[in-house]
Amino acid sequence: MPSTPSHEPTSTILIVGTVRDNESQTPLRDLLDGYGDRVEVERLDITELDQITSLHDRLAGRQFDMLFVNAGTANINQAETIADVSMEEFVRVMITNALSPMRVIENCRILFLRTA
Ligand SMILES: NC(=O)c1ccc[n+]([C@@H]2O[C@H](COP(=O)([O-])OP(=O)(O)OC[C@H]3O[C@@H](n4cnc5c(N)ncnc54)[C@H](OP(=O)(O)O)[C@@H]3O)[C@@H](O)[C@H]2O)c1
Image (tube, rainbow, N blue to C red):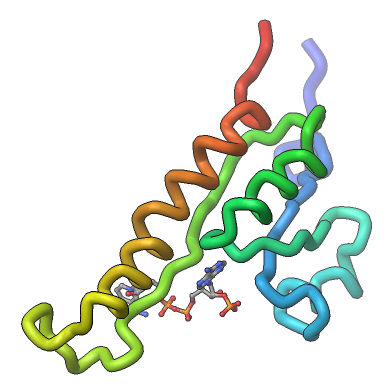
């Protein structure tokens, strides 16, 4: 049975991360300097459905193991209670935190389905 010392990596992990603003230098883009062969950066605002479908199309045909959807937002004024918050602000938070993550998962699920 082949064995490999446990401290040696057996494969190279590739990470595709997303940013809303693909022009500015961000901590994710900083990773490209040292790990450019293992990190890719794509543009995505999760509230923009066309950007989700474009991302899916760019990644189509590739196979990923995990998807983290960690984009999120809070009320601009975090002292506001539910009685105070405007309908517009509540809808903005719900679109970002509830609807959009589900859209990302639904649109990109094919990238995570394993074929036998
Ligand atoms: N921090 C806490 O202690 C805490 C505690 C409990 C719950 N939460 C909740 O966790 C969520 C995130 O909070 P946080 O403090 O981690 O905020 P954060 O530091 O501002 O991080 C939010 C991240 O989500 C990204 N993002 C926001 N809207 C996006 C969009 N439309 N498309 C793509 N990416 C988007 C932001 O990207 P950019 O870099 O482009 O802005 C940023 O990277 C919020 O819902 C908050 O209520 C936070």
